[in-house]
Length: 410
Image 1 (cartoon, one colour):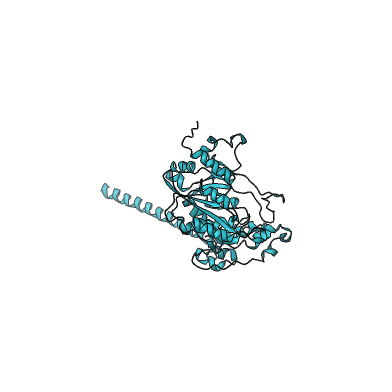
Image 2: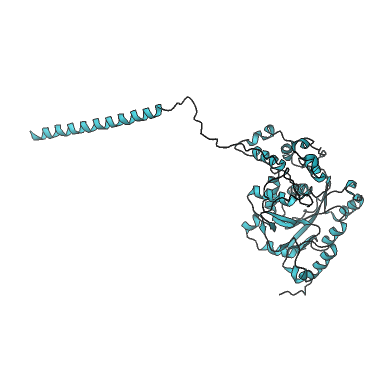
């Protein structure tokens, strides 16, 4: 008779356990329901602060233009498919147009709205007024092309900024460090970058001589814009477009002035020793860091506060710098997102900063010359890559020194 009583006791215990579990579940359900009841699901919850705030636009004109571009090209704000319809600035629309070397390009017109958008516009030096009126223009007709420069893919493309009257400088470069052909086992090509020098700037008309030079050497690029100091930035972006269109297979690009001496062999030796990773992101030169705009009106690099405020990013001095074609293509693409700035070296630094790249300082670039005691010493140039400045005669002389097979340096 004990076994049935034990069985009945076990069933009772089991029943009580189940009831406790049910009560516990009911309690949890009630609490959860009460908690949810505090929320009003008919209205969306608004965070106490915005996830992203539209910045207050700067009073400085360039900064304000750049802030607008940053806003336009922010994918979280303006979807890529909406940009052409949502942007009203002429600059952004024109910046999106890629040049067509077979089509006629209409001459860009000045943007006179600028005169009311800069508080001290009327008191600015004339060079600033000229730059600002055409700041939105990026496409200009090409007057002289050099389609054969990259007919055979160059390992190193030398792009030299020049002015139309500088025949002697260009010829000295052709006969020395810019000689096209095979050097140290690598193909080297050279192209000279020109705008138009005008009578209003007191330049003589040498257009006929320039056309003859182009037919003789086939290494001139000339665009139909006024060649001034502030338009060197325009020369930069036009070259990047040309490079992407006409010479996309070049491995490396050196870009410099026509009054520098370049040790092309030293550059080729340096490039030959790079790792694949280093080569891809290469950008080296005489890098200037922690620089700020000059506010002295008498200086060549004067920038007024009404145009730009803030510090400059690291940039390479414009005497010359060396970069990979991969970086060149990226510079070309990102330049469409960066407003033109009147100092070309700084502008390139701004583009690099947008890419997340930092230019690397290389001791072989001497854009502020070398010690006077070494200037007539052949061995002083053997390991360098660039020295600035040098005259055409000095360029040919130094090239002869370092090309001498009998030269022996410790």
